[in-house]
Length: 236
Image (cartoon, rainbow, N blue to C red; front, side):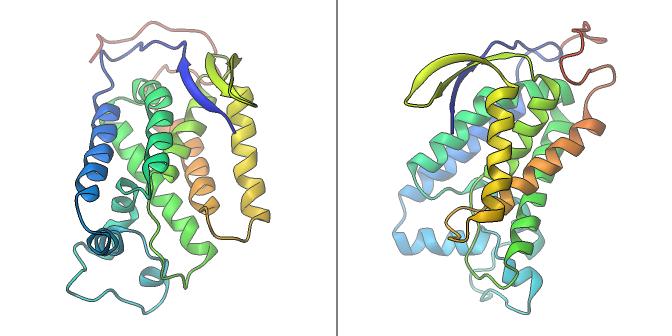
C-alpha cells in the first residue's frame, strides 16, 4: 500500500482539470450532506443509490418507496457515496493526484465518460463475483482504479512522491507503486474471501481504464511516456 502526495506532471492540453475538480467536490458534498442525516436515513440513501447485485442479476427489487433512480443508474450513482472519512479521504487523494493528468490526456467530455464507464464496469465485475448479494456497493474505488491504470499506461516514468512502508516519503517512477498496487488488487480478488473490500470493483475498474484510455485519449497523445509532443490545439 502507498499514499500518493504529489506527481511531477504538469498539464499539457488543458488549463484546469474542471471535471476532476467537479468529481472531487461532488463526492465531498455528498459526504457532508449525508453526515447531517441520521444513520437510518444514510442507510436508506445508500440502499437507494448504491449498486445492489441482486437487483440486477436476480428478481430482487427495492421497495418502491426508496427506489429513487432506475436500477441501471446505480451502476454510476454508487460511486458518489462513502462509508467513512478514511474511505472518502483516500479515494479523493488518489483522484486529486492522478485524475487531472488523465483528464488532460482525454479531454473534459471524454474524461467524464471514461470515469462513469470505469465505475460502471467496476460495479458489473463486483456483481458477477456475488450476483445474489443484497448489500449495496458504495465508493469511488472502481472509477479511481480505472484512473490509476490509465495513468500508468500514459505516464509510467513520471516521478511521484509517495508515502511507502512506514510512512517514508520517496520519489518513485509512477509504474513502481502503481503496478504493485494493481497486482495487489488481482491477488486479493483471487484470495480474499472476507467480502470487506470489493476487489471485483477495483479490478473491473482497472481493466476498463486500461482499455478505454487506448481509444479515448486525444489524437497524438503517446502511451508509456514516449516523447512529449506539444499540444496540437490551444489549451481548453
